[in-house]
Length: 101
Image (cartoon, rainbow, N blue to C red; front, top):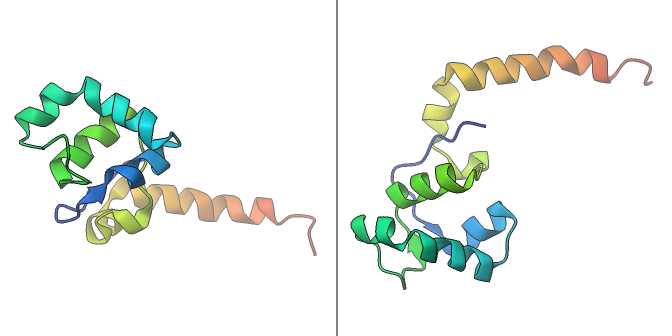
């Protein structure tokens, strides 16, 4: 899935850990390996919420898909990729309901 990051939304480390399906401790160890990059972004190791540029980097680096409610809805709705995905789901829907009353 393509993420359309909300440029004004900070996301907590615990939320990102949950989305990555790892424990907060495992996620903290991962962040420690990226400390030099986060330091260059001006992010404190003690920060509980991460700014959008850090969220974008982490999601791309750790392959985390943000749910739609955490994404920029306007950018998401205008995306040709997202529109094609919705169209594909709608086309498949009749096949999913065949043979069911």
